Length: 294
Ligand code: L34
Image (cartoon, rainbow, N blue to C red; front, side):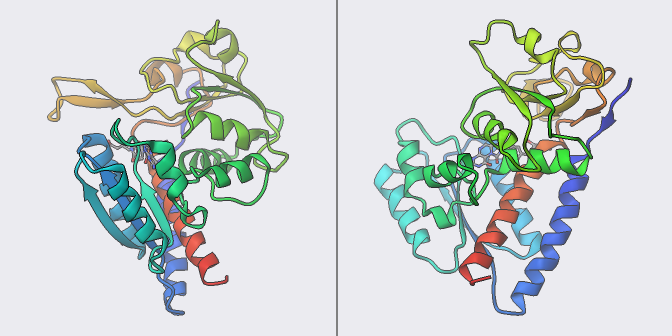
């Protein structure tokens, strides 16, 4: 079997077109969704993700407030900026791009963001609500994955899903979302990680594999069954002297070999990444609607 490619770019652009129409409607009532963006330091990958997020905001009519801060900013200065954004009615969502420098206490920063403006869904209040099955801002990458599965016609209910990776951003939240008693849940979920004894034993059983380990070739063809659905969350920069930039992007999955066994597979780039950005836009528009009493 040769897999059909799940085109994340195409799904993302369709959702963004829908959001753009919605934002235009809101503007007629003088409601302009606003996103406060904070990037600390000069990590090239983070810079490119944040630039892409701001460009996407502009394209659909969301106002964005860009804050690029030096890596040596203090915890106190960062907290003061978040406090200002918490109290700014033009700002409906606050994005603090991760990772933060080592001297910054990340959990204290995430806790300082008002849960009502926590469009990344990283605040403990929103995590707790999500786990309890209550309405909350859902984290963007997992939410984007669910959109891709649904819009590709993949049946989640009853599926054996194996997640590889247990990060706060992807592995832990997607596991929780997929076990919810809800149309986008009802899956049987296994979470594997660096201490899992026999990874292949688990992945071979999977109807759906979500690879979020952050390491190329974590999933190879011998580790999957025929017809598996593959969601590749990895965005790894692999040295490649034949490329102008000196690197190429690779996911966590051996794409060329695994696509010959899978039924559906997301590419890297052009799979999950564009959906992460789209769900941030979605949450920001939702937040603006809630703030306006809609
Ligand atoms: N606060 N920090 C916060 N929120 C997030 O949702 C993120 N994440 C992750 C890292 N830190 C964060 C992102 O924004 C990962 N991430 C992210 C966003 C977009 C893309 C990848 C990761 C993306 O657009 N990837 C493109 C390729 C980009 C490139 O050329 O380098 C893709 O097609 O996969």
